[in-house]
Image (cartoon, rainbow, N blue to C red; front, side, top):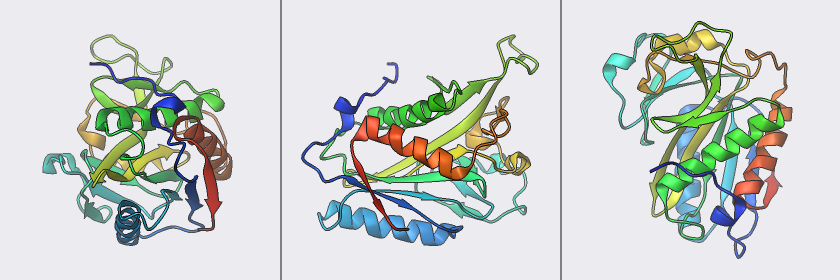
Amino acid sequence: MQREDLSQSMFASPESPPVRWRIAPALVNYSQAVETMEREAAAIAAGAADELVWLVEHPPLYTAGTSADAADLVMPDRFPVFATGRGGEYTYHGPGQRVVYVMLDLRRRRQDVRAFVAALESVVITTLDAMNVKGERREDRVGVWVRRPEKPPLPDGTMAEDKIAAIGIRLRRWVSFHGFSLNVDPDLDHFNGIVPCGIRGYGVTSLVDLGLPVMMADVDIRLREAFETVFGPTRFEAG
């Protein structure tokens, strides 16, 4: 079964208030971020708070998802490592990477985890398209990928590809948390301490690595526009 391309009609919730859109003004400690997500997701599930998308940057760190293989932590002493309840394997977070935590009540939208992941991929792909970058999904690799024809081909002769965005979510009472990360201008060498998402043989890239000297604020604008095409209206909330 192929992951589908999602339009607004699939995940928008006309009867729900606009999703709160919050941007953290400084680096956010990972433990603090998890505590905030837990609190917000619980309030959303209880009907005590509107849905939330929270955009952050973290200090350099690695996270281990529920499927993480210890062998994929290549440099365990390089940065702090946090075990996390999201799906997936090892990921890197750090300055220059936009992390987007998505806390939505899928009971109001569509109770389909596979389709929800595809919807998040669509947000990233639409964001990249607005900056003239062609992001693509792969059936056997969650995340968003960019073809690199200027690089040597893969061992099987196919064109080289680099990952530009990772996705890892968790649901509790059908409210999502965690989300996705988009590489804007992180230190790509920091990814060498892990096998990103347990996928060997592929590289990692960023918008700046692709030759786009964009600012985080510009990317945030495109992300919000893309999110609204899939999930509906947002309202800004001070971070």
